[in-house]
Length: 408
Image (cartoon, rainbow, N blue to C red; front, top):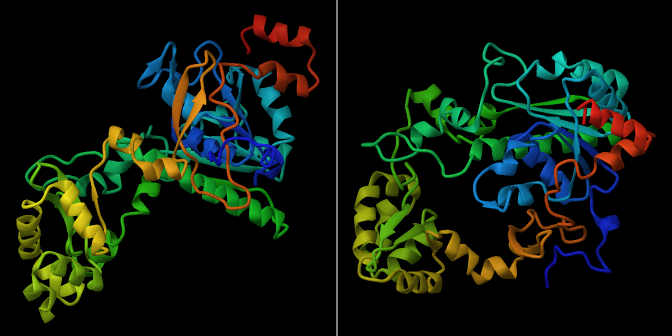
């Protein structure tokens, strides 16, 4: 069963964010992906795009005809309206929309919305209960706040790039814009906490200030405590995790790589037993992680000697039987054909406007009583402009006049 498809038993009424209205100002990834997550769980998301061009994401990566496949996925369940936010008429429309909006999400450089009369002071004066998620490179204040910031910069300044890759080569990046998506997640978490405070604690509206660099910095584990205490600077270590052993990528007989994570004490013993290495399994110096970390190179050599005698499939079968966490390193084809992804509805099919099918990543997390859903794909540019402006009481003639003036 496709748990994310609409059915008679699961409609918009059952979605957990039904009744929440979100206004999305911004483009590309960090702000829009945060809004996408809210839309997947039932929020009404009104996305504002520049007339004529729209969000640049519409033309990023692989295209189907004239629209990015990424756009169809990230912008699912959103309504698209076009507004030239530099126009006073468009700013007045935003002011009207904000009267009946719970959350505004924006990812412009700090100060940009203030120039357009759309900053926090202006919008919160209209709606004191407003929650405003502001995503930027460096945050809304501080000496770096005026700088432009993208995920690549955030991942670098926060320390992630420095520890990514092999020590004898230049630092590398993760293959996705992880800084953006981490910021999106923090934005949604912040919005939900602010909404709880507003609704349950009888609080007031507030700003959720999300910086890309802080979103990455926040997941850097023990990097700062270790430097503060010992002056220790963590370096690049390739596929291994420093201080956590054994955990790494190991070559197999068929020239594939297997990732084995046997850093828990009991799992380590099971791995060594599966490898027929009782000498290591029963070595008291290796009973706990600190001892294994000191001998991590020795352990990696032993594991490699074993994996290179087995194909990837053989090694995975033996490790599954021993209850040792392990996996091949999947590419898109591997994932697409993986039965577990399909069983969990993590790859779902939806029809494009011309009837062609598109495969989408499923919705995360999975709620047992009120699961999220894909109700429609990313919309055409301005597809909902008339609907949304009409809800403000504008007549077709007034809307056409705005179109003639290139406001919409």
